[in-house]
Image (cartoon, rainbow, N blue to C red; front, side):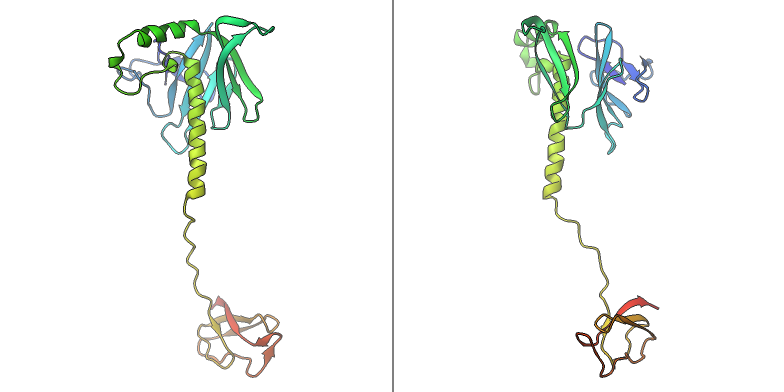
Length: 241
């Protein structure tokens, strides 16, 4: 389920697989829906000139959770901690400023452009100034809101930055995490010629041309006075009986 940005409006159910959506029923819509935090999909959306833009989680609050930017004209980009986004003041093809408009762009990690749109930003700035800059700030009990509270694209940039921080934190944790404990390895049994065999099975002598013998527990280890290629013969248990 996705909530429309600050302007209010319908809560929708978005199908991540197909990109289709429908209006959520009264039974599906969370009561008082100030924030959407429901299993499966969580996020918000914005409509600009009839085009829907979405920013949402799949498999929210699970180890498989993923974060996506999407439009209903077949743009689908994962916010994975590598890609990044920015909002800058818009210009026309000649480089002249476009008053009251900003440009939202998404890039691959190597700087390749993945998506870009220009939108009318003044309405969000005015709402921000009215509600916060000249309003009653005592209503905010935590950190004061930023422009992203009203401007959906600015908030989306924050989502990309948040996922990058998460990625870097995970990479740092992986570097500083203690190594996993070594697996328990049973000791290798060894015996010298003339000693009783301590364990029935197949034995081999590396320095006696890797010779193998099969013995029962208690039998005398062979070799006697024979010497291998590099010294006294030592038998090692290869496989238990």
